[in-house]
Length: 191
Image (cartoon, one colour):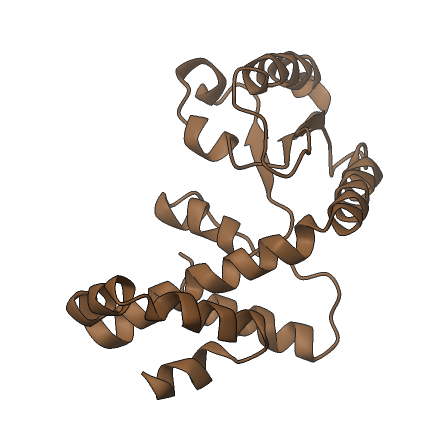
């Protein structure tokens, strides 16, 4: 699952100069949605014929996805994968529009046959370009930092103190300090 150490690892990798960092979850419930508060681009990988497309098992997570990729679209599974992609495209039209103005993409791919892999990278690059030019990338990262700030304050101080800080409006000030460049750890030492 995803922990605050996952976030720390991302910060460390960014500080080391890595431009692309992949975070993988294994479908363990809450960590699937928590990872949205860690990443710029949320890629959901699905298997055709697993039954998810019919039962709506992944509905909550699908609403968060910036792209949905049907994997293993090769050999006997090619037709199933293409059918699943059509079904997912239809399903995505039923969800509310994304706040950032992006329209989630649905594609198929085969790592075995090296089909669709370059297209996935192109989608990610398109997304990144659009989010940078619209200012959403910075806004999203600020919102993510605020999310983690609130989580850490609750964790470190407990619900009672957190609620008191919230009621007194002090958390708003802490959020401003965070956006202005203070780290969460610096803020926690001041509480």
